[in-house]
Length: 114
Ligand code: 5GP
Image (cartoon, rainbow, N blue to C red):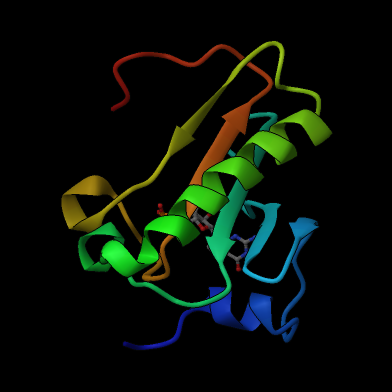
């Protein structure tokens, strides 16, 4: 599995605006924000995509969702609401092969997404 830019962010080899970190996860602002709040939540351990996740990754993926909740509270979008997205594969629009959730908020979201 080829390493991505996200592994370099995890190792602090390249800068990112980190908003949350613990033993298993990292959350940082997206470089190309699509909403007033656009944060990426990633596991420190690389999994390429949801397609390549296994049952053993279930607690890690669940933990990331609780991290999303904490980050949303920290950034003050928990009451207005937010959207959580995970793109998977080519048709899903995934461009970085290190699994990640997008947390988007600070404005009303359209539905359905494009
Ligand atoms: P995907 O398209 O894979 O679902 O999302 C990848 C996201 O990573 C994109 O929204 C893109 O803007 C963001 N991104 C790519 N490279 C970097 C980077 O070096 N730093 C940060 N903070 N975000 C990045």
